[in-house]
Length: 110
Image (cartoon, rainbow, N blue to C red; front, side, top):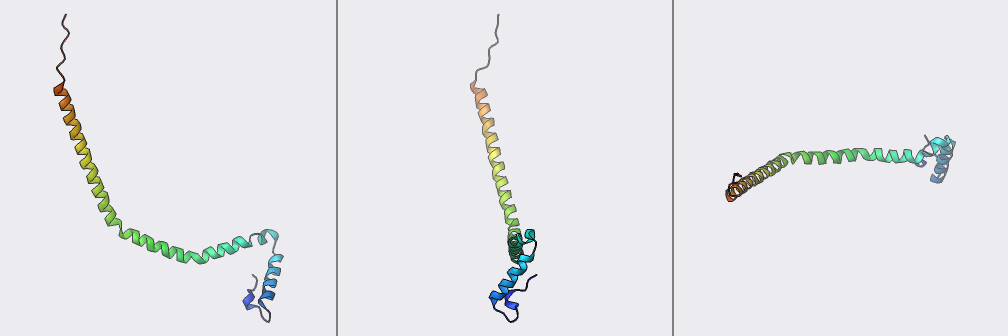
């Protein structure tokens, strides 16, 4: 690969940049077209350790919340069960009330 401009011996950074560009121009056209993608990949790979470290910290934080989430889930389940019991009791009472209010059916006699 090309020598970075800062390490070129006996020349200015312009000379180094010109030499780097000259070396890049010698590359096959298909490879030269991909140099910006290669540079972007390099930048992403440089940032990857920080991203992984940050993600690891967030995962640790999330795992510390698991017991509290279990408690919340249990509370929600209990609330749901109580509501379902109340609804089923109300429906049973309503059905009993409706059956008491309706007069018995008369049999059709000839």
